[in-house]
Image 1 (cartoon, rainbow, N blue to C red):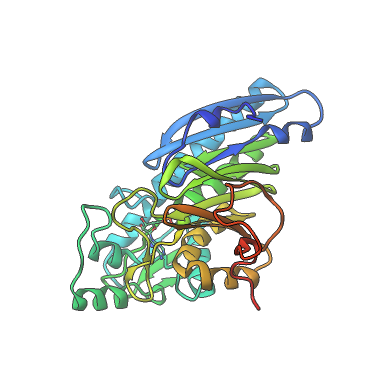
Image 2 (cartoon, protein in one colour):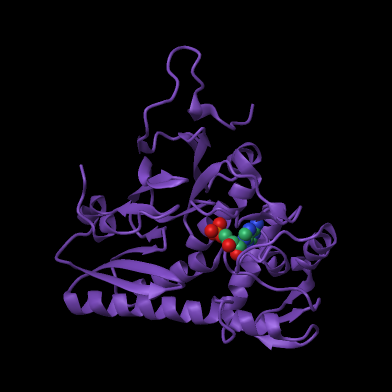
Length: 347
Ligand code: AMP
Ligand code: MG
């Protein structure tokens, strides 16, 4: 079956996942219209399918979602100097910066995730991104530079009050790369629903958010043409992290300052898109041993791991749930074959 969806024609890129939406259609009683939009945002594409009771309502809700995505980019992107986050990064240490309440709330959430992931996710790792020149052509920092960047990437040096932030260290820099898209998706969902949408599906550069149960196709970590699994998940969001086809690793372990070892990729489902985005990055850093243990202790989270050995993928869910609808043929068969369903479970 190859359900019709605008999304199927796009985004078979790197770690992208492709939502498969039509299963959701019957959930909506009564007449309805779906509007599809595609816009360039955050250095990638956003694809929206917004369903509402009539065409005008669907258009209005799609417009509201797009405006919110644009506003999110204007607040969060540190690729420009004008955003609120860039302004905070550029403000001298000790000086108060007033933040929009939503941004202040998101910053509290991501700092909290830094604690809850034991530092595997770190929203204040701008010094490390600079040390490795992750936004340029890449470089390897000296041991002394690395030590100083790890020390400077300390979220405790960000003083967050209700709608005010103060950097307590001149080197501290917030980095939204691992959570900005997720935050923007949550904002867009709220805006679309408030504007009258009945159902919302957005694919922002491979991270998908849906207000109804959906399916995604997960591709091979190094081969975007090869679908390794179709994964069924409830309403919420799925994000994927890994190095993809990039030659240089772009996910760092903030605890050591070094690139996280590459094992393949991990996709995360969570009710909130910000959480899914954060946790895909955090679980990639934790890796296929520590990561599954962490997931077992967090029942609201689902994860799908794609590990590669000699290019052959093994795909398994943590916790195991029978929600992988199609997976590649197992590399091994017979009684001695490893059972991927049991990878990483706590003994
Ligand atoms: P993602 O593709 O969502 O996993 O995010 C990767 C981006 O987030 C990188 O390009 C960096 O800008 C940033 N990043 C890398 N490692 C981490 C980390 N451990 N915690 C937070 N942000 C990170
Ligand atoms: Mg992320």
